[in-house]
Length: 416
Image (cartoon, rainbow, N blue to C red):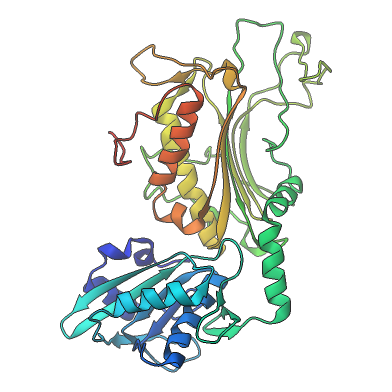
């Protein structure tokens, strides 16, 4: 799991907080590397730092700390802060990376001053497309972080990385097709109660988060269990739980927590979208659902009350579901890119209640589905899902004919 400190914006770190890495003995590993120095004078020194950055990008992303010493153990532990003379060094480092790497990975560097120098921290994002190659300094090689070392990628690994980049969309579709999602991303099944026209159809809200890359069993069987996916509510809004409070049901796909309405009476009749009768004994109207699939997919879904979708509660729920999804992926050690969908089905029949105390409502014009989709690192959800919640809700509000979500100010902060 990612140490809590590393989830914060490095711009806000202090020297005391960096020293916690030493005091807490946070080991070097797949996503963390310590360097006592940063030398950028010779060609070989520039290649070395480019290799380290590309290795992280072609792995799971992570952090390099220049100015923290480590011991010689198999999983090196930080021993002390070793501030380096860093005047202008961050700019030189950024220039080297921007010119030597293709494509240039997502990264950010920050210099944290100390009494006798500085610590330079570089946060590297996972490559979301083609693998990162060192193309400068007479190099045309790929590297990858593997455990506590950075090694060259072999030809098979490079070919597989390029193929995965070109087949990402198909890989996602294949991943979703292999699991029994209640809300199918590609095909919507509509059920109505035609004998009760006064009962509006309850809109179905769903959030699906899927790993873009991964194995056939991203979440091993031994990690499936109630204790592994408990909610601690830290960071939740309004203390609204994501899970329904029911006990997890464990099946071949992972863990599921679901509450359903009882099936409608047989005499009432239920038809699907093409007019074929549906046996109500076989169909229960889902009210609330959380599912975690071992293949690397998280699903949250909810049907709100018949009078509409309460915007504040809906926004809090989406924020909490994003945060919980981030914790699920962190729990199983997945830090790579995620594909995200937030959608409202039967939106044509839905009302969005913009305030609990007002009758203000709005309908989606001429569409039965309002949807938002994007990609994000798992760490972004885990750190603070406010910004992605804001973007998602802006898109949903616009689907209802409203310019933007009124629950956020111009800077994207919550309006309480």
